[in-house]
Image (cartoon, rainbow, N blue to C red; front, side, top):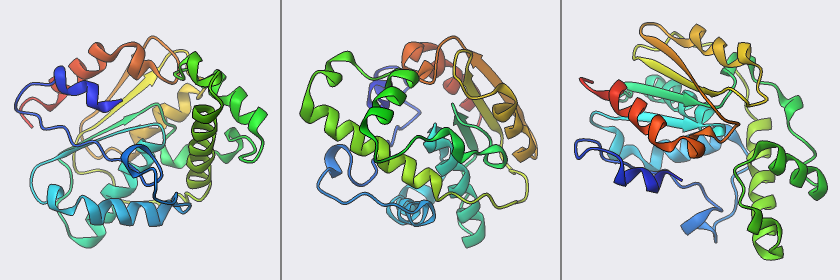
Length: 215
């Protein structure tokens, strides 16, 4: 998803997509099931790129991961991001496990994929691709279910939140990100469902670039 952004971003922004184990080029690696362990691994793997100025952008589960990375970088005394973007996710304090269906029920996972949108119809007609997609979604749900909210000091950097107007996440759960902000905070709503980030790619990227100017 993020690789497409490279053609839209200015030269002064270097895009570094974070690929999780069990996905994409790391398909042969086992899924990590524990949220905190995944955060630790991301921080270890990305440490060389997080020693200087950087920003974090997380969509859906990625927003929770970005929040936890900020906490871990602070705890370790490492360089914190200068800006954080949280997209299509309830605030950590308003996270709710009830939204996740049975991870071992393929029919329920398929219904969730269709409800969320963003999955090409061709996937549903290809048994191999559908199996991979369902396994990945189930792994994501396991990770999210192991997330435990911990109160932390407000962000020292700007926090920008994006939401989809037709997403089924209640608006107040997204608006609750404001409680994490210690300074600059913005909340932008885009037309579309949970995957408005794909439906309105140019608008999203333009907003990101504008908010990073001068940072």
